[in-house]
Length: 396
Image (cartoon, rainbow, N blue to C red; front, side, top):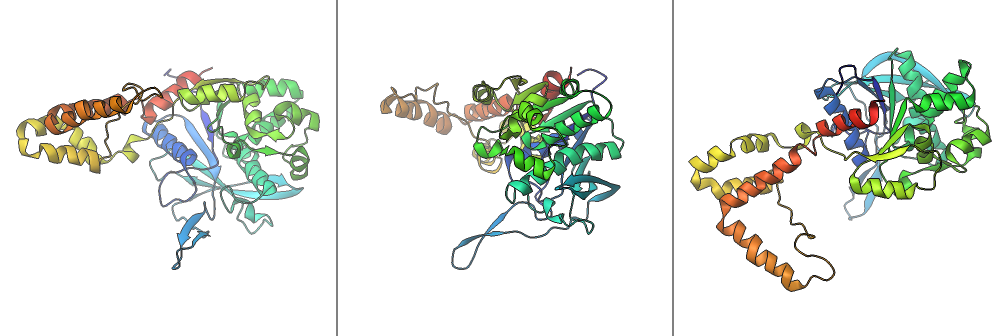
């Protein structure tokens, strides 16, 4: 990384920082949370924008008769810090006030969350449930995240060089950035060209639910178009307005989240003109959060334990496999698990190679497990992922 790093504003609909903080639903939020922690560990100039969800995501419960039902409950988090900032977003011709909370207590970079659950608002429901409601509610949520997020950064006086949209949910931030440029005297086209230099985008899923579309009429009714014409909105994301397409056309560069996903994403969006290039940056984890401390300590002392405590060989392997989650992978391609492979080849590999290695050569098995750990420890660490972001995505 270079000495002068760009200041990044990271936008995401959900963040998985801790089990006690219910503002996430799954993998997207976990990745965002790990990113925040990795950024903090490496003391990088990143600020994060999200939403404070009063009821979080749905919880499923089972009643006494075995029936599954959804549960939503309100959360009150004592660790939220009042930034003293409120901003406004006009939704359906009404001013919606958004309070800005700061979160920095989970070993994470500064995270600012917007909250509409205020007495000033008739539309306090907007930040009620993550991914809840129908089209109008989802649009309102995305307006708060995107439009409100940019306005929160301005009110907080936080300078930004790069806006990183994690999924298309933040796409309206691009419209707000164009609007700012136009208010300063630029034409629509020049403003669009200018803001593309400042935006990067991560696309995650080819699943339909992860690539939202909204009708132009509904966006205009909600005020999400910020006064842009139907023709201008269509040029950005088509009709209906596709949030992923918008992000691809508003950004100067995009990334998929694995090598295979890069191929899939490029095929999926091949017909979209004027989109940004989609490169591959593989997702990773914050090791300190997900890898048991005991495992790390054990790993550092494996050789000593093996040489000096022969009686615990099997216990050590058992500890690594069962308590630490270490498993050796058997690559089906390497052993001939193709359609033409026979059952004999499969069983021969297991009987002649795998089982003898496990039961008769414990030291060899342990060495294989160590090698397996080492082969993934660095590559699947969030430190590598963030370094790739700076090297491949953020640097101009």
